[in-house]
Image (cartoon, rainbow, N blue to C red; front, side, top):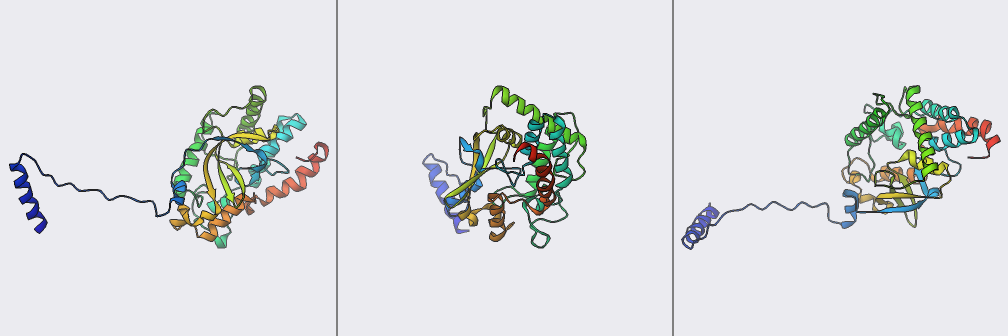
Length: 299
C-alpha cells in the first residue's frame, strides 16, 4: 500500500517536469549451480576436431575399436576382408543381432535387476548418462528418430535396430551393406571430417588417463579401425572428468546416485561389456576366434 502511494506521488512530480515514470518488474537471474566446474555438463563448449588414437577409442558402448576386440562391426569387416566374402560380414552381424537383445535401459548401462536405475517397463533406449542433461525420454525419442531416418534411407519403414529383439534379416543386410559400401568409399577416397556430425565423441578422463567414446559415426569409426587407421579426426563434443561426479546433471537431478554414476563411468572407461552381451562374448571367444581366426591370425 505504502509503495503504491509513493509511486503515485513520484509519478505526479515527474509528469510536471516532462517525464513519465514507469514501474518495471525485473526478472530474477537464473543460475546453473554455484560452481563453474559444472557448466561443461550443462552446455557443450566449442571444442574442435582432434586426431585421436584408435587404441583409446570405444564404440557401440563397450567395445574397443582396436586390439582383440568384441566390436561386432570391426569383426564383421575384418572377417569379410580376410575371407573375401560378403556373407562372412553378414553372418557376424546376424549372430550379434541374435545374441544381444536389450530389454531395458538397465541392460544398456549394465545394471542388474537388484540395482536397476530405470523402470523395467520402459523402452530399451529409455536411458541416459549420468553426465548428460538429457532425460531418458529425450534420449529414447532422439534414438528412435535416428534409427527410423537411417532405415528410411534404405526404404525400410521400421524401428528395428541390431541390439533389439526380433531383428529381421533385412535389417542385418542393411547394416552389412552400410559397412561394406562405406569401407570401399574410404579405401578409394580416404576419410575427411566434413562437419561435427560425421564422427564425434565424448572424452572420459580418469586421473591422468583418458579414453574417447564414439558418439555419432559408429560405422565410420569401425571402418577406419578395420582399415588399420592409427588415428582418427574426431569432433570432441564433451569432456567428462570422473572427479566431477557431483556436478553431473543426472546425479544432481537424482536419476543416479554417485555410486551408480561412477559405476557407469568405470564400465565405459574399462570397455567392460554388460551382462546382456555375455552370449555374444562367448560366441566370439569359443566359435569365431576358434574356428576362423586360426586361419586368419588374431583380430
